[in-house]
Length: 150
Image (tube, rainbow, N blue to C red):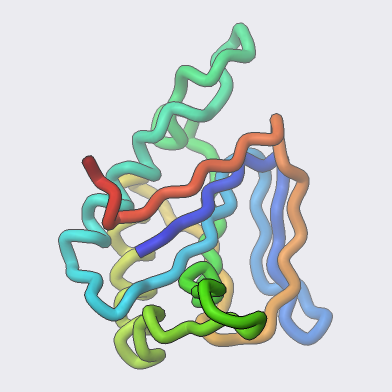
């Protein structure tokens, strides 16, 4: 499981030129699931994201978590995070979880994030062709991989 986490001033997802979801200060999280991911990967990633101390404190330092600031979270599925470009110029997505499994993980991950934040999060639509807009704050961009926990 891979996530790209961006601290944002605002972010939104549009589908067919219609805004589907938007947030203010918080995190935009792009997520991709791998063929051998397990529920434990979802738990680890949700806990890490909710508690990751990358939000600004009053002095402007990265000392607070999203949970502490009660910021927003926008989750967007993006299987292309598992692209392999080792051979040739056409990316291979062989490591990405099959859509039916990834969809189940996506919904379970939303639930885990909401439970960790104790509030609803915003989300894109799984497998939709989406336009994602954001104003990156910092910029702060963190890449997490559940296979590299240690």
